[in-house]
Structure formats: C-alpha cells, structure tokens
Image (cartoon, rainbow over all chains, first blue to last red; front, side, top):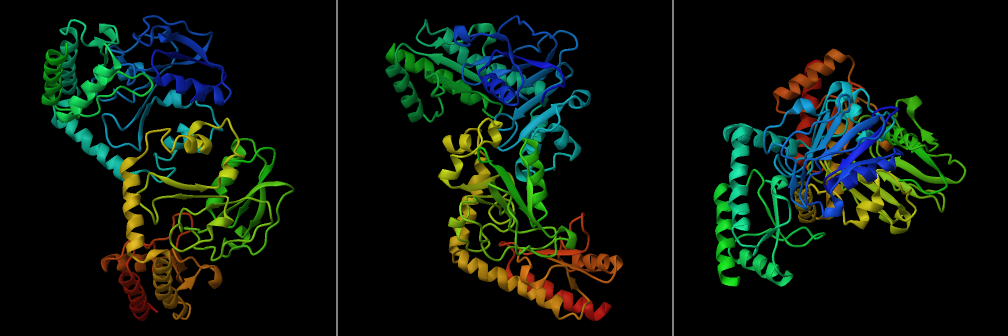
Length: 275
Length: 275
C-alpha cells in the first residue's frame, strides 16, 4: 500500500515496523525513519517525529509485543498525511478514534480470532491512491473489489472472528473490555512496582503495554527459575521473546481477570521466597 | 517463483493458469504461452507444447474446476526444464510421480483440509534458484528458511490437514482414494454417456476430470429445473461455475461413493421424466 508519486515515511516506535520498512524497500520505495527509540532498547514511544518531504504516509505499530510498549492515544499527525497503523496486537482491546487512521491492519490471532486472517480497515479515498501492479495477494484494491473473496477465504477463521465479535458485545463492548485490560495490567505492573527492584519493568511507565507486560529480574538464572516455578503453578507462556529474553506476561482480551490476579500473587510469593 | 536470468514459459491448459500468467507479468517477467485449448473452450488437455528459448519453467494446472478437464498422467517435459504444477483441485486425489515436479502448490480447500492454507512441495535445488527480493509473503526461500513460520501460521487449519492426512491413510492410502474417485466419476459419466445426448459432457472423454464433472443440457431452463429438482432431493452445489453456466458435480475425496451413485440415479430418473 503506497500512494502514487509520493515517498512513504515510516515511523518505527515498535519492533514490528522494521518488517514494514523492509517490505516497502522491496517494492522500490524510499523509506524515511520518522522516529525511533531503538537506541534506548525500544523502551518508550517517541513523542515527536520528523516527516520526510511530501510523505506518502506515516506508519506506526500501536503495540510492541516484544518490548512491551503501547500507544495509549491516537497520534496527532500533520494535516493531509495519511496514518497507517499496524494494530495486530492491540486491535479490539480498547476504543480508538478510527477516523484518525487512513488504514488499520491487524493479524487476527491476538484479540479477534484464530491465526490465519488479517483484518484491514481502509478509507475508500486512501484505497483509491494505492499503487497498482502489485502481486494480487498484496493489492488491497483487488481484495476490496472482490469483496475479500478474490482468493478462497478462510471461512472457519472468519466465522470464529464473528463469534469473538459477539463475545465482545456480550462483555459490554470495547469500553468494558478496555477497563478489564487496565485492571489486569495494573495487577501485574503493581507487583513489579512494589517489588523494590526485584522485578524490573523494561518500559517507561507512561508507555507500558496493557497487552504484553515485560520485565527482567537480577539474573537469567532467577528468570529461568521464575518461569519454571510459574509453570508448576499452572502459568505458562511467561518467557520473554527469544530476541530479548527476560519475562513477559501477555494479557490479551481472552485472559480472565482472575488469571492476571493469580500471576500477581504468584509474583509476590516468588519474591518472598527468592529475594 | 522464478529462476534467475531465464524467462518463464507458462502452459495454460486450464483456467487457473491465466491467473498464474497475470502474476508473472506483474513482476516483470515475459510469459510465453506453451499450449492452450482456449479456442476449443478448454475442452481438452493439449497433447503437445512449444517451449520458449531457455525457459525458466513450464507451468501446468493439473485439474480445471471450471471446465472439467484433468491431467491423467504426469507430463513429459524436456530435460532440464523445471515443471511447476498448480494441483489445487486434484492434489491428494491419486498417486503422482512427485519426482517429475520441481514444485507443486495446492490450496488446501479441495482435498486436504479447510480453506486458509496452501501446501507447497519444492525441490531444494529449484528453491535455490528463486528470485530474491519478492515481498516476503511470496518468497518461498523465506518461508522455507523459517520453517513455514515467518508469519504466524494458521494453526487450526494445519491441524485439520493433519487429521485429513490420517484419514487418507485409514482409507487405504492414495491408491484406494484414486480407485474411489474413479468409481464415483464413472457413475456420473456413465449417466451422461448413456443418456443419448440428454446430458452432454463438455470435455473429450480422455481428459475428463475425476473431480469436477461438467455437463450441459438442451436448454438453460432445463438445467435450472435439474438443479432445482436435485436440491429438493438433497443434492446441492450442482450449478456450473458462474463464468460458464451449465451443471457441475464435484466429487472430491470427501464425497462418499453412495452420494455419487445417488446423483447418477437421480440423473436417470430426471431424464425419464423430462426427455
């Protein structure tokens, strides 16, 4: 997705954007880095950005699953600059001001359904500016024109996404889902912040993700023990991403409140035993 | 998938190959039409082909779901010319001589599982010749290097494919599956051939598909009545593809023998009433 006769500008506050940059370069587009916190281990969301001249769009990744940062507001972008957001890991976790985005894309597998589908929301006038001649599977104009059935769609996956959308409504909608996610994350971040440094959050507090809570401990051995003891207590998936190590608790929509509370209590107990 | 420094040659005995040609052109490759039966409404599989000079590969589509043709033998190709087959609609319907193919690809949704996955089988030495720099989702080297997990894989779909593969083994393997498919198709083709022209097959007998049995009747009104009466008898999906009209019975692996037999009997009854 690139606008005609413009060079795209890509902001990379989050890890996922690195891949977006690499793909843009492949189809021969110059890429400008509008902002990055890479030199600080992606520990915060950049508060400013510098656009290129006549940018095709600004791209952001709204939640970083690996480093644990999240955009907690819809960004302000210069007038006339389309905003594209990769919302793969926090789409449907809270209300957003959808009008601010020219395009949103999100892999289904975090909050909306099984893996194997991507949700794309795109403004019609932005779609009309898309570059033509891309391979069909990457050409959103072709998908839109064919009602998302240019290829045989993954029917079961889409059906399951429908069921999850109904579940969101039954839960009270995105407002209620967002409150649940805040409460869940607070249990765990409180356990980190009240540990006197036994657990160390990797992200500045204001940019902490409500989906992926990342923290380190004094040694890798202690982290390994924590993960192993947690597993014995029935809590899995607490190992950090292989690229960065450490610990990570993922608190997507489907995680119930009591599970997040139980992890926080486990963290306190573990600290008492091993501090 | 294109070999370096060679121009691809694409044979199009089947409808699906038209899309393969269009995609090859998009990434700037000259395409040569090695053979086609388009001027005869795709009613047969061309028995000869004419390669371009120094072809990158020869591409065939082994079963045509719309026009109802099928390759019943693994093609003979000039030495040194890689053969690529789109087997989407007859993969796993019979044994094949897999060594003859440099690459096979097949959408899962016909004989191997739910929609949402594609099976790709590719020789390592052919994979090594692939063009680099394609968008990652279309770059088989990237998929192979990452164990098919460069993107988050459609786990449930793959699991279901595994169950279907076990079912194939329980059924007696591809040899037995192939016999079943021959028997099912024979029920229906016999009903066509013994109808004195009431049902008219659209394909020359030697190239008839065992997966998609296409036929016409004297008028579109009669075809509509046939489809409607069949539906009342519990038989659905008999309408031909929207591009060509007529009638089509699909007899993929999962269709039981009695269902094919019941359709043949229904066809005979319908003929008695309406001939």
